[in-house]
Image (cartoon, rainbow, N blue to C red):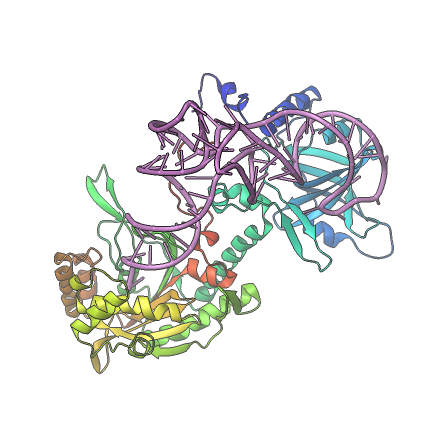
Length: 516
RNA sequence: GACCGGGUAGCUCAGUCGGUAGAGCAACGGACUUUUAAUCCGUAGGUCGUGGGUUCGAUCCCCACCCCGGUCACCA
């Protein structure tokens, strides 16, 4: 550990890797030259892409004077001169360093630069013999010295114009644990998160345009609800009480509809204390929205429109190859009932199948505890195992069994079903929506059924929320509600098959004692 | 949680039928004033994930554990 009495023992320790020690040695040489390795700022006139754009091909050899900054991504020393590339958030620009043109101090600094260093370069733009727009350095500034080598690969632009990186930074564990290095070195990773931000921005814009109010509801909750999942549990010392990290926003947002905030949405993290895999993260981003005076049909229209609009605005298209299939996210999406889906892909009729048949089928699908599961759970298991993996194109599966939809209104004319739909895309659930149950007595009965299931050992059954029932007694207007898994939407939009790739700092086990 | 694969230099990897390890890139020294995977010459760099065991000897074989990836289970 870091010893406060002897920090030098840490940062200059002789058992650190040689490339690190070399760079610390350069600090001393910089000090001899009177060069401050960590600047306070820099007056930039152009970002790197702006500088590229500022060079006009008007036959003149020389473009405008610019002042640019970035990381040194590459360096080719030719003795009396050198070429290198600077990189910033969204681009790169070549710099040409000619000793004759530099002051002695800047020339000395050039000798002490390393890949990864943040530098500022001032000078005119010009076009090299090979045609690349380049800044000719007249002055050079060190903005931040890199003391640890960034894992740059070597970049090659093939004759076809393809960008190929040799020996890059590819180890997934290292990339996730050191996302800062991943982002610094892999521009395509930065693009993922630019796209992510863009899509979330467009989702917000869409909802704002439709009159939705963005709200924030509690993450620390005395009772959890709104989904079937096991929660994280924590404790508030002063209140002397157990609190749960929310598994969904639902019950709070619907309280707001009761409060006459008739269109609300929230984008935020939910937390579920369950397994981690390609499509599941213990903390993930959810968009939930509720709109008064509409129902699940209204939510279908909204979902199709919102998703295709946001994706189209950010990507320019609504299609993306995902796991080897071209996924078309543009509206309209195909529709089938829950029953049709189970019949077609699972060979099961959820309304007619007997308990024994369902148990047999669930066991055949690898569920070892089928003997202990109630009918509705078996059906749900079979839906997940047999239907979802087949639904690659966005598919609206509607009219769910009422037993697994405790917060949804019964379907008009068919009380065994709920007015609920899910959108399955890329083989996993993207959206869940329903006509919100607004009958307080019915809701009480549904909570009671959940309590029963809980008593029977179902850890995911929802606890009874008396305050929520009180709110319903004040009157929840007819309401449509929808939840969208934002991370999964980003996965589909970027074509990346792992939720970790679209999460800046994905959940990983603590890696204690693994320094260096 | 189960099974499979992996963990070797800063990065990407190879390798040792058991005799304490190599390459490319990065680094360091040198040459080169329009290069772009620059090139050329040279040098250095490793507790082979951790802990045990077997053995004269283990990075390699065995056991346990840790971490990552994949598949399954779990996850409306």
